[in-house]
Image (cartoon, rainbow, N blue to C red):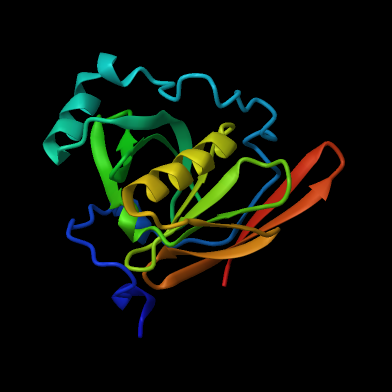
Length: 201
């Protein structure tokens, strides 16, 4: 059975796809251009770092999808199939994950929490994490609040379905950047930080 035909959990929502997953390019190298994750705030602080209520386009997107409870919101970097970094707003609600383009105010992708199988993160102090979605293509992102995002996704998933979301920690993991494009992220601890490489398989 193909990973895109998985019936692990039924999915009523039609996925919204980011149109950037088709730009397949050459492997890239990142010398941890996204810092080293030392600025993660304590979990007791508010998780809405972009002030969603003050952004009418975000409220409109959530309202259109029937979502109202925002568990986490912040700006992140998303990696396209070719390894380009795009600024995005990540919203996590009690039902779904939203990826929004702050430059065009457009919803690029919506993923129901039920479609997420696991999260891949390294064992080092970097900012990268991958959301693995067997029925679609995966997402690789980076944020200085990685720990908060992981915690929010685990708790939201457990609350919505009593399903314990796996968080796999490894300094080398694969993800599907597109339906027919597999990439591997490799992490290496070096003096002054973490060296990150993204290579095509």
